[in-house]
Length: 429
Image (cartoon, rainbow, N blue to C red; front, side):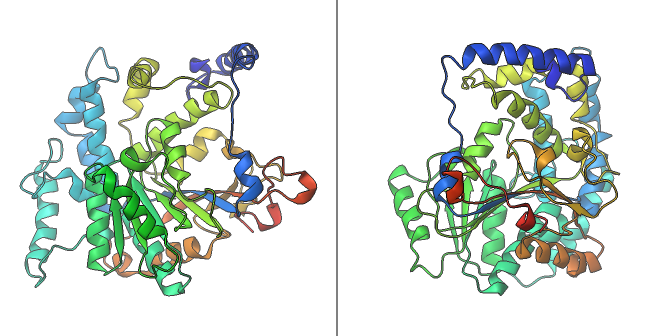
């Protein structure tokens, strides 16, 4: 079954995998009751899910390619018994840090660069930025959101919401506390009110923080920074109606739990959930692993826990581990390419299917860039990226591809039995 889910599987392996999956499902459905979020769709407002693929900046591209050529990467790839070891995971984490923000590949205090990024060209690139910052009369260094494609998009999303006067609040989730540090600094730099919850916060203080953010009368509340490991499960953050999932987890269940923080009982506003990926990079590789695992878990409920990492290490072949250390510079969306979806063809965008399935990306709306996306905030943020100071300075990024799925409240005539898609007002409406 697992082999048939791999991107490199042959048609025969896929067919065999599906046949085995059906047989196993027939056995497990006698013992396991699987609950989905269909019940929420009966009572909660509309939600829109967006997978947003963002081109890396020129700064990120140069560092990414330099790292893939480095001794650090070559040492991993030349291993005759290559597998998903702790060493490999540590090397991958460096790429994940880079696509979040280039400064994350430096040690705390910016004293030195991580191994693999310590070549002369990379040092010169950072020295140029540091030299410009040294001339600034500010107590704290600028965040330099223009050097990270994803961070630049989040910055423009927040600017667009603030300018709209809508009163929308935003939850931003990351797997890394160092990334949350940059978001917190960015909020302070632009004087945006910010709440933060991560693993360092005492348990008895968390409820007070969440309640303060959720209070409708708290007109200053705007951004809530959340560590997925500390608060990705169980928190009710209905004070916000927009959520940014900044980086993917290897386990799809962790991301699903984290993204459910705002679409919960008590929510009154339409919800918008953005999952961000840096195009052609490790972000997409991790997400593609999620798709393979999710395709299995939609029919089989499996136990997760301490053995999860071991399962991942054993399920990745040497070829797939090597693929994690590649960079597709030409694609608009490697994930869309992997799906083999032909619905978009030569069109700028295509609506979601009338019977859209949340777990089937091929039924979602597909957009080149943000063309036709039914969310003014995202389309305006994409437009600002193309025309802002970062683009003028040659650091620019852009949204290369968007997938969208709209889930409406179940209509009365449906008897409230499930999700109702509205293709005429879908994410491409």
